[in-house]
Image 1: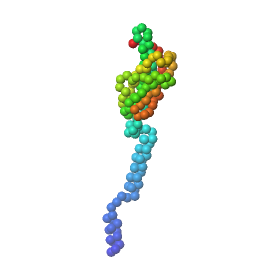
Image 2 (image 1 turned 90 degrees about the vertical axis):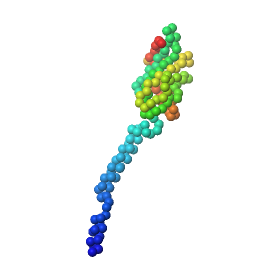
Image 3 (image 1 turned 120 degrees about the vertical axis):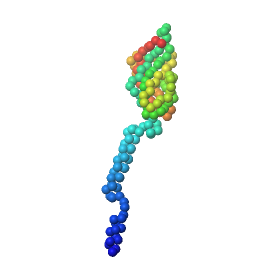
Image 4 (image 1 turned 60 degrees about the horizontal axis):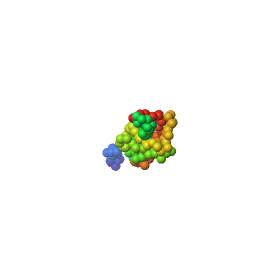
Length: 157
């Protein structure tokens, strides 16, 4: 009689079989590995806090003159791609004391953003056509992006 009760008790036990438990553990391990790889390669950059900002393509800079041929200012145009929202706090021409002024909004949204910056004249900066110059862009998250622009010459207002 005790054997019969033991068999009946064994059949009435409910639970997961060893194969189902192993399958659940394998699936959980794969999901965890994918999340770790995603963060390691920046696939979840927008979720990670600080956005990533990089230059897209090459930028250009030109001297802008009035109709009398007098140089008014230098204008640089470049495109920045960002993974999340961030603002431009400062813009300066590397190797000079010249600070630029961003035309339009200083807020960058996720994706490509075309930026136009004007720099003053008369501070000893004398660019040569075809030469590449560096612009340092300070962002609201404390990071700095170096942007390359090529000087193309003069244009009339």
